[in-house]
Image (cartoon, rainbow, N blue to C red; front, side):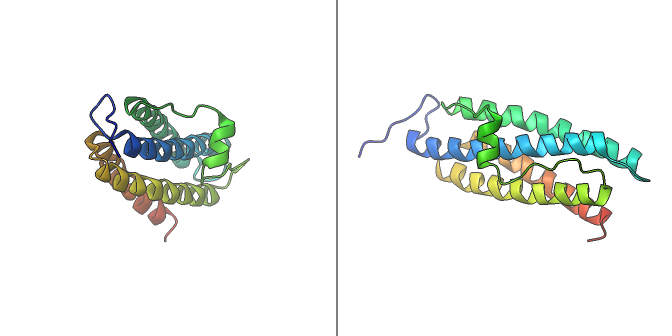
Length: 159
């Protein structure tokens, strides 16, 4: 069987698998973004000022990553998902509606990071197999940032 090489010199079959997994990551980031945005808007209580700012940092960071992941999918020669119907269908992160309790919101943030990190580690394996340094580098940047945030938000909850 002959290998087909895409425009950036990578095996097309391997990059298709990678693009599919990146679309899964994109869907998870979109739901993470919307949840963090909702937490930012709806948070109440004595930690309002602290968490309001933290949730804004999270959704701004997620928005940047959403764009980077979508552009990476395009660089690989595929189309990023761009409908909420698709995002909701394939995301492991579910919608969080009307959450105003800080501890509950932080718990949902931690759960979201867990799911995102799982997908990113799968992508790291696939990008290594495909010899895709661009995607590998992106995941290698994201993972330690998010692991640190998991530690910090876990500490906030005394976990």
